[in-house]
Image 1 (cartoon, rainbow, N blue to C red):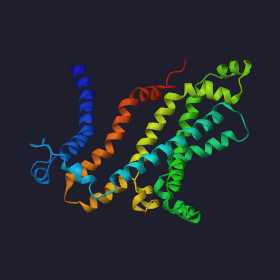
Image 2 (tube, rainbow, N blue to C red):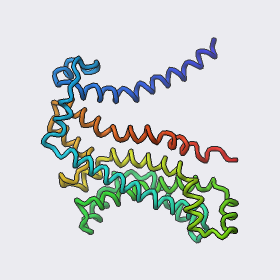
Image 3 (cartoon, rainbow, N blue to C red):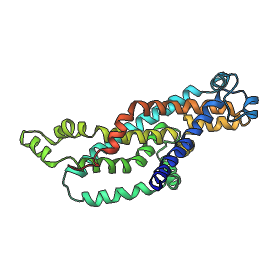
Length: 274
């Protein structure tokens, strides 16, 4: 009986955790289909009459589509550049011997613990010197710099699990280092690369502070910055804000649904050493 009770405790904790995670999504989605009056009278319940007026109002009079495209451009560019650099750097640190590699890697690892907010002022001064304020290039460079340490760390640790004998056999067959990277390492590291890219996509898509500081032109604002200002303009109309948040959340949910298989494979990759 005691064992049965002990077994129920983890299950109850997991159920509670699922409720805590799902409830904000439920609250956001349900209220996006309510009128303001119904939201005030019943915040948690299902709306009596579903309305899409909040979504229409979210797009009217605001460059919502432009904000969405800006977020897409920044996310794709930053994650793609980060993935390519991390792939090459991870391969160099894991499988190539050169002077100072350990010291260089040990310098990169502590950068993972530096909060992005403490670097805002020096970054802004540097970007201003180069005249890149209010340009997408500045934000992409900052995003890449912030995401690289963690991504390089993950790629290097994963590539360490690939047997050296596999690369030695390819070398004997006349395979160059570049060919070994593209033909052997890249296919093997796809799960880890997708996993790190998913984490980076979510972070860039939801990032607010950097894009708010460096992209002050309204035509360059990201979706999250736009919704923040949107909230200021429609402080009392919460359902319209919820509609904007639903639109911003849908792409991330779709990505996770289609990439769930690769995400699990990447998380388990390298966990078992044969």
